[in-house]
Each structure stands twice: as structure tokens, then as C-alpha cells.
Length: 330
Image (cartoon, rainbow, N blue to C red):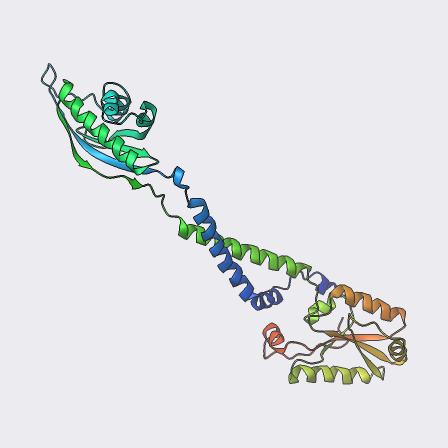
């Protein structure tokens, strides 16, 4: 009957963290790779084909309003009004008259945007197209049309441009830092998720608790992995030999089956200690080997772990911990 306390322990967090520490270079590599991948994906997505790039320019136009019949200055013009006026006659006709024949009304109207940002006397005209030279041409034509319109409409004394820029490529706000962060986070998350899944599925025998999950045989100790660990193992073996007598050490190797001679020797022995290679024996295979030896009437009295990583065990148990499992503990 296996010790239920070990079976129901769940995940060994300390062992998990030590195993993760050993995979830390891979995790850091995944984080770095995710960051680089995030940057590359962002650059690819953000790169706009030449035919789809936009160029924009703007002009500030001062509106010198005339007084109406009551002596008040005209104030009926706002941003919405100007957007409609720029796309309608007579301003659109004046604008097209300042352009060559290959500019259509639809293209010109779509390119122009008019805004009153604060002062109703200050109009901002923005032109945006896929080519810098057409942007400059449309903006210049629109400004000229407004100046002409200012001399014709009764609502104005004058309209004149006070500032005009040249077309520049419209560049979206950079999100490179966010892309790198997201890529690094995904790299970390996926690497930890992958390691956790591997850890859950991995039933290799590393410490005494792993052995107890597959058998209720007493844990004799660590056959190697440091002078102190070996001494504890030798002490336990000496104690076992006082009880059943001759003890046979059976070194489990998944690449090698037990020979008939080995099985015969183990049947004759007063007790058999199954020696498991550190980190190379899987729980399922250990269970299979134990059942096989029981069928052969071998008197199994304990399990041990050989070729252990002393540094790993010192971190797991603590350097000051006495490495001794009580033989026969239930």
C-alpha cells in the first residue's frame, strides 16, 4: 500500500522551482525571442506600401469678416460650414481652375478638410493625398481659391493665408515599445506554460518523494552524489543487513533487461534494494520493474537513487539537513 500522503501531495513547488532554475537560460531565450518577434511583426504590420502612403500639408487662413446690414460682423461661418463650402461651388470651381485637368472634383473634395479650431477668424485647411506633389498642388489651389473668394463674397473684406506648409509623410504613432513588451510577455508566458506542462507530465525520479509516489518501499538513500549523502546510504544499508541478511543491489537500467542469472541471485538474497539512476528512471518504468521483480519472488526491501546531483539535492533539502530516511517508515 503506497503512502497516501505522498500520492496526494500534488505539485512539489520547491522541486518545480529548482527544475525551472535549470531551464532559466531557455526561458530567458524565449523572452528575448518573443521581444524580437514582436518588434519584427510590428515593423511588418506598420510598414505601409508606397501606393497606400499618405502625405499631408496644411495652411492657416485669416478671415477678415465684413459687417452685415446691422453693423455686426458675420459670424455664421463655422467648421462644418467651411467643409461644405470647400466642396461646393463657387469655391470648388475656383480650386479646380487653379489645378491642371488631371485633377477631378471627387479627388480634390476628398483631399481637402476645413476646420475652425478656436478663433472663427482663423481657418485651417488640410490637404491629404497619396502623393506629395498632388497634396501641395491641391492645398495651393484651395488657398488661392479662398483668397479669390474673399474678394468676391460680401461677407468678407479679405481672406489671405498667413501660414502654409509643404507635404510630409503621415507617420503613425510608434508602438514599438509596446510591441516588444507584448512579445517578451508572450515569450515568458508560453515558455512557462510549456515548462509547466512538461513538468506535470514528467515522472522522472529525482528525490525521495518521487520514489514514494510509485512504491511504498522504504527509501534507503542516495547511493552517490556527495560524501555526506553516500554515508547516509551506507548507514541504511548496514541497518538493513542486520535484519534479513544478505542484501543485493539491483541497478535499474531501462536500456537493459534483467538476465536470468541476475534474477536468480536476487531470489537467493535476503533482500533487494532497487537502485534508480537520478533523473533517468521514469515512475511508470519503475512500477513495471517492481512488479516484475515481485513476480520473480525477489524480496524487495527498499529503493535508492544513484548518481545524484549533489548541488540539486543541497538546494532541495538545504545544506544543513541530515540526509537520512528512516528505514521502515510508513
